[in-house]
Image (cartoon, rainbow, N blue to C red; front, top):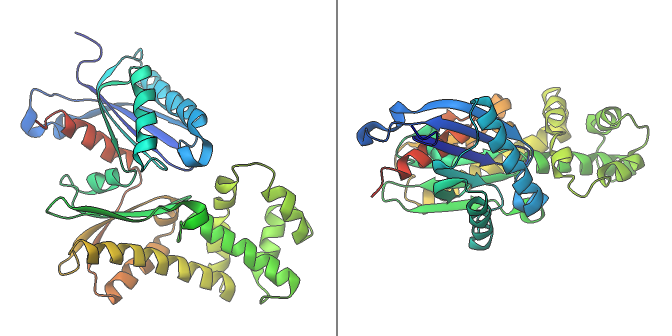
Length: 321
């Protein structure tokens, strides 16, 4: 039997990491393909956000993740029957075209699907992909799909124009609060001392060379988010306000989509992923509470690995005629 028979590949590429899962399916059972799916290999590498790290680095990381998935499965790399790629920063046709060209050149798959990076989150939560996906990791984004198949997104504008509620913006707000406190322009906050201790420095001015040490500093800055949550948990009012604003911003994204897609009159699925939502349950509950206060009822699903949704999409594309 050809080694590629029944193999599908799902790839989820974000601002921090790229995850590839290799699975085998029985496509002769078209009515229940997803239940025949067996994950046989997993691979991981660095960021493949094309806007954040550039195409060449993104493609290197994609190659590494795929190679490691095949290695984990103890298989030689072959062209799979179907692959679904969901990459942050690849929402426009121009980016998707380059990604397709790369996939064709390396003979990744016989059938390739390139989707919005939030869409797999919906399919990981529900086989019909109906509901709202909310991503808050290094960056942030919301995507909704209703029963008519209408789709809309909110946020996802990147670190310069948006990413509200993300680890990056939470951390950036904390850094700004710390230097304002250092100047005397803002209220005193534990963030000042904690950020200096974290970087093993004695002066806020030493943050400047640290934060500008590498061109792509978004990931490093975003990694400070757990510190901000910790300080907020101690009752620091400045950190608490930063976290409260972040949850308000994310709730606003989800509500905007629920209203736009006419999903606000009945409970809908809210699928959350990204380090901020997955690792901060009290914060996630705050987002849900604010949605409820605004009249949007949701059933929340935590999606630790949205790559599972890319496999669902890859499998589904083989049975769609």
